[in-house]
Image (cartoon, rainbow, N blue to C red; front, side, top):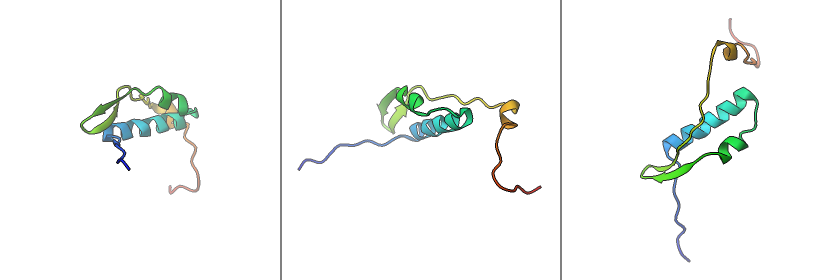
Amino acid sequence: MSKAKHTNLSKQAIGALMMALQKSLMEQSDIVPVLEGFKIKQSPEGLVVLNPPIVRFNEDTAHNWDVVGDQPE
């Protein structure tokens, strides 16, 4: 049986996945189109995402967070 070759995600690619997740949570949107749009390339560090998502955060966004549970005052 031959040994299957594999590669890992680079830290940059993991960060891109986390940003995609954060963006979909903030926008309450589907993450699948963002993941399908990733352009991925092999590098010495592992797979990298050439077009990571950009998450914009401003004061308007900060005030729209839902808080779950009691928070200390």
